[in-house]
Image (tube, rainbow, N blue to C red; front, side, top):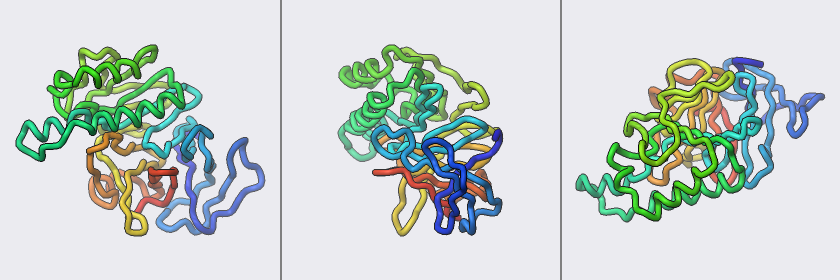
Length: 264
């Protein structure tokens, strides 16, 4: 069903009679904060690989928001990751900020390594701001550069140019401003319908706890920042509150992926 997102887990949802393989059909009934009611497919287990994920259909393509914060497009064996911000601790130290050890890159690499090892993608799309500034690539420690090169080996690796960095140029892979495949397009900052993007580092506060989240509506998917030291923007604040439609979901990351109506 092109142009529609189908996804909501909410009290009062009613299970339909004909679920697809691996999922349950739920007709939204009284889902707080949703102006438009849609029939949706909800897959609590996602791919069944490792951490639970939230499966949804976006512009006719089946996607999975993983609890780790990566987006998995299983039919295309494509892993999408947002805002890695490699080298942020080093940049802050160089500019007179906190003297933090450069462990944030290793933590980010370790989490990314875990998902790549589990899912074995043929394609990886990094949605921009992969490095925290244009000089961060040159500051990579040798061990970290070797680790990243191992993750990239044997895969198509697409670096989307971000606003912090023009994209790494010496590490291999392909640098593009935007990528289109089938019905989906990928860029750093959301501009058009049918796009998957990053940039805003969305977070949602539920029951007093703020967690990085995916934001999903009929027009766009915005990924959380994957970098270990990145901060975030409350989804109730502009421009996120203006960008996302009334039926938007926030898919919370953590030990499991959990979808809720986007807080307003």
